[in-house]
Image (cartoon, rainbow, N blue to C red; front, top):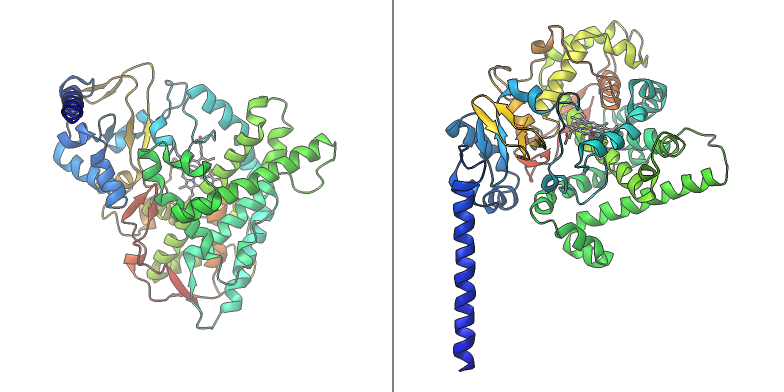
Length: 490
Ligand code: HEM
């Protein structure tokens, strides 16, 4: 009797669940406000479609979205909630400032690196403005110029490491070397304490590896919002077994938190900061910034964002640009001729302002940023209050809409033969002004590494398959078997 009851109850539950799934499918396919948008039905039905490509096939949904555009046109519904646009002319209509309309971030996607109060993870339009406003002055062109000598010091260290290896058989992985450079620059610039990565004999390969491993978790963290908070609650030795990259993240968060507390204690004791100011001093002593943006937990999150944002993107751009310069002697020669006009003696280091005036170096940097993609994953924006228009399509308010740098940068109509490295395409006067810490690093580092008359870098067991990034783990990622972009110093 009990068995029959249990059987019937299970049957009933199954029936109710099937009915729920059927209603959900009908809603998503026919009744949802974005049901009319083109795209594969399976993608509209369930997020498991994206899970298959991003988690099981390892960061391949972006490539799949590209195929959807080929089949369905410039706007597609890529999952039950989100639309994706592949039309470069629309870029300035989607990513708008507050004076055009309010825009909010997509909460589901902001948890890609875990739940955070950082500027990047802030959903609300108004709160984002406040938080961004609190840290923006620290990264203004004026601030970067003030701290340029600190950046130059770190670059000088890299150059002396290259000199020390000149003529030896030792190969250097440029991805590790530039990650160490970017990590030391951002920590020196922001916290007045370089991490000392450049002092490691092999350029601390664990540093780049940790960020890539963390990136590899991004799709799982987005799909399963409970995963990151659960891992965070566990003892460290359990996390070490379940998700080694999380350990690096937790340890870094702890050290950043310690630093915030130290600065707070220093300020409370009325001690004056006699050394280089840090981003924490700047925020904590600014009376115009609300107490909410001065909380220890929030400042720790913000610091982590800055370190993460400042490391992988910059290193990836520098390593990729270097590969193409070494691979293309005529381009390198042209660059060195131009650099020779401001670098007349060995070791002469022009400042950022001088280097910015060089049109070919500027074109090389633009082309490096284009070909390396920066952030590969699509970036969603939501218009909370008003519908937005794309061609004949009216997109309802609160719909996440995204575009992807990969598709914009590889668009053959704007960039003919897009996977070839051609700085010439940027030689016309550009409307873009390159002025933040990343650009300062790109100008100073490329000028120093490729200075005329110094050492020469030669590729070592590296080809284009070590440079291309077939995996979108938010950051563009190389094939797993690649040993890096390796060079020998001649
Ligand atoms: C080549 C180097 C870099 C590239 C390609 C790059 C690219 C990007 C992109 C595409 C975003 C927008 C993300 C979004 O809208 O959701 C972003 C945000 C951000 N980046 Fe970078 N970045 C680079 C270097 C840096 C550096 C060196 C720093 C630190 C000084 C930095 C700090 C930030 C911050 C704080 C945000 C969040 C801004 C916000 O949410 O308003 N980035 N970066």
